[in-house]
Length: 462
Ligand SMILES: Cc1cc2nc3c(=O)[nH]c(=O)nc-3n(C[C@H](O)[C@H](O)[C@H](O)COP(=O)(O)OP(=O)(O)OC[C@H]3O[C@@H](n4cnc5c(N)ncnc54)[C@H](O)[C@@H]3O)c2cc1C
Ligand SMILES: NC(=O)c1ccc[n+]([C@@H]2O[C@H](COP(=O)([O-])OP(=O)(O)OC[C@H]3O[C@@H](n4cnc5c(N)ncnc54)[C@H](O)[C@@H]3O)[C@@H](O)[C@H]2O)c1
Image 1 (cartoon, rainbow, N blue to C red):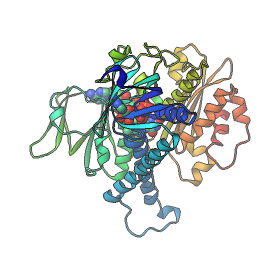
Image 2: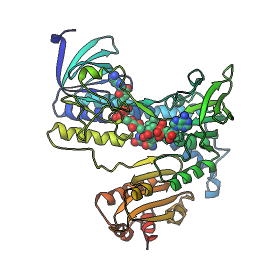
Image 3: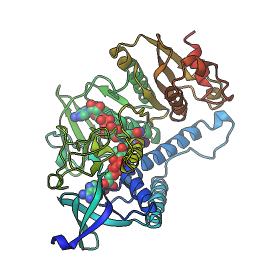
Image 4: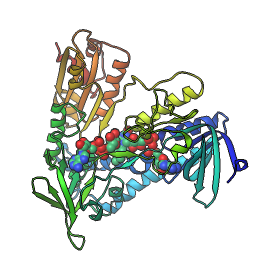
């Protein structure tokens, strides 16, 4: 293809993740000529194979748990509550499918040129797009955004590639619910699937190489999450370093050999050892876009890459690997494309690990706060102290908050308990507003809600 085949547009978005699709729709509605190219997942990773399907399944697990406790709560259920795999799959596919269809319409309504195909850079701000319907297009953006996400990592262990193991995407096919499952990796994916599948009735063994789950959390908080999993029947093995994996003949058990020679076996193995940036075959060199040592696209605080008018966002740009971080990257990009001066530095990015109950966190951990030299006070509250927890029979969880003793500012919080992911937003707002903890302690909060627990949490500092 030659120079005169090039289609010039205002904005070219490569990869339709949260940041990219949001920006493409926004700019197209504003009258820009926008091309967005997406390889296979309409709506991106979150909707198709990550947050949405997994949280749909977590919702079913929570329903099952509630059904198990129905009788003691005065509700009669005829028969033993159980998972119907075909209906579970259909439910999950229905939720995902509806969101994908909604995106097809949203993309069309925005006026963007949405292309299903694969993009590869061939020059400055210029990508060759091989469309799914067999055409080649050459598109040059006045501005270009790369939002190609990350993909599951397969650890380099002897035998693992022949052992037909699952990753976070293939497990979602829900071909079967194994009686026994090994999970390799005790991060977000490992903990969420361990909790969900244990509730579904699978006997889960969680092999984690380090000595605490969720390495970014305080050790006491990570230990509480481990307790939750153990109570759900998960065999949590910390410091379990795997040296090899094999599948027994005839699609028999999968066997993990640990470095001490011990063997652990189950019907299936889920690999949950992290995600790698999607940059291979993108031709980033031709566009003048450089990578970091870890293989992410190198960006500055404005999300500018090393090439003029080429930006990157979301997981591939090394942003925290959460959909809400990618969504915020969209806001940063939108402002910068409008000539304003928006940066990612200093933003407060919370997260929630959707075990049951869930762990929500914002700001600094106690460990981080101390390492930064803060004189720290720690507030703690068992969720059983919260009236709403009694009405909803929530007995599991502890809330923790870290306060600067010199300024009374809230530095961070880790809330383990039902609805913690909702309550953490209130803590985050207090932090964003710079409220001293006493204002949260003394605020009049609705009774009986889990949010009211914030009064009690900060009371514990008196
Ligand atoms: C199991 C699981 C559960 C998760 N749960 C949560 C959660 O509950 N909450 C949360 O906040 N985060 C969660 N995450 C993380 C979240 O999914 C990611 O951080 C988020 O999806 C990243 O979005 P993104 O904008 O970087 O791009 P993505 O959504 O990853 O989109 C990138 C897109 O680019 C496309 N693409 C790649 N290469 C090309 C190419 N050459 N040409 C065209 N298109 C291309 C891909 O097909 C993909 O659709 C979860 C992740 C996993 C794995
Ligand atoms: N609720 C959420 O927001 C949510 C849910 C799922 C995933 N995510 C995102 O997706 C990303 C990827 O999740 P993830 O759980 O795959 O990665 P992760 O980085 O959170 O955890 C992977 C864990 O596996 C361990 N590990 C690595 N190699 C190992 C080995 N050979 N044996 C045993 N343990 C090993 C690591 O020490 C690490 O703690 C996360 O960083 C997160 O940002 C978010």
